[in-house]
Amino acid sequence: MSECDRYERMISEYVDGELQEPEKTELESHLRECSRCRRLCDAFRSISLSLGEEAAPAGFTADVMAAVRTRGESGAKTAGKPGKSWPKYLALAACLMLAVLTTVRLGALGGRTSDGAPAAQPAQFGLAAAPKDFDADDTVEDVAGGDAGANDACAPESYDSAPEEKGLCFEPSEVRLLTVSGEAEAELSDAESITAMAEILSCAGEAGDVSGEASYLVSVEFEDGSETIMVWADEGELICSSDGGNLYSAAGSEDELLDAIG
Image (cartoon, rainbow, N blue to C red):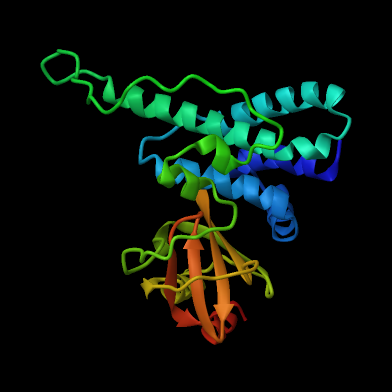
């Protein structure tokens, strides 16, 4: 098992919000260094966020990862150069995720009305397209097809610059632990420090494009889950993306962030 194979297994729990410490911090450190694993993690998050608010079944990402690994391992026996097949399995993972999440949405729409009659199915929700045969050189964009929205969701390091809604990106009173890693590291658990970080990272408006790796990763842990905020420092200003969402300009500066974490 390669190092990335081990971290890919962690990614399935990480995206589901089930990965515990110290593995969570270890994985986040690896994601900052490994573009391959980061692309996989970002693709899964983007697909999940793009399909709406309906919750997927518990552990669905782990099931997808298991299916991808099974196909990847069987293919590797005949491939000779397993590394060449990585785009194939990343594309397969993305499509499996789309299939599972689309099923969840269709299931939610297929409930009953208050008088017991079946709920009407919107015409635009048809049957899922039959799976295609994947070529070893396919990319996620090739598999996603002509849907521009799907291509954007699967693009490995592309961020939407549309503004988020202005205000706090998380509720300080619901946070039990806030961890900062990257160019500075800290763990914050007191209400005053967490509130200060929430205000610094709050949305002040739209942001321009960013390039390269994030300067900081801010992991926010709640009683029932967690979220990760990627933070880029650009000439003292902060540009953020929460769990792979749109880019936004933070209300605070890098100096204020460093002061808050001591």
